[in-house]
Length: 331
Image (spheres, rainbow, N blue to C red):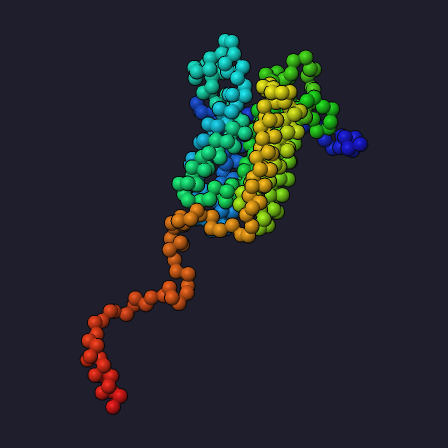
């Protein structure tokens, strides 16, 4: 019924004809631009949310200096481990960066979000220890921006014509070039596929709205908002991952990324349960003994006891002489 109603409006979703720009000797992949855009947006949103909680403006940059590189490393390691046969199978060249299929050739693609979450979490924890920010406070501030960054990053899969789902005759089916290396053999040219990138974009954007709404409530502090992020993202990813047709290692009948999504849900539930012992408003975003180091943190709070008049010159007064002068004036 829905397909018939949409058929006159949407016939299919075309894939882009290009996925990169060549500027002189430099090749700029749109996938990389989508990821960079996501990082920038997440940083700006997290800075705004963390500053409103009392954090020093742009302290998020100090945390990102560790979190982003470790997220990229973790994303690559996770991808390699979950595609072991491709990188370490017969005839492979895993350690030669000049050969296709090298574990070092990240420019050929191959990063995984669950590895990025693990590596990024380690980097964020180290960054929080460095800056004095509470890790769970940072995680809550990050949650909406992170989900929005993941939505932006999925457009990179659209540009690359990759990670799509089963064949479909739905009016929003995704067009994939028949000469694409990932096009399933045996299917006729013009076959449409489930646009799993778009499903995840829509799901993530809905999740951003949910996180912003919940973030206004006092209960969703102490890491509980990030727990909701893990549950929301994991639940969607179980579905989208289950209909993808790109190669993946299978463990107990499930793709490795399905297991990763289930683990994310489980961690989110555990955090909600464990952190349920905390009630009331979360204290300062800084750990005990730590605080802001910027100029605003040193300013007076405007109370009378904070005010000292240093405009008048200091004078030494001889107390007996002052007392005699006062007595004479009284007479």
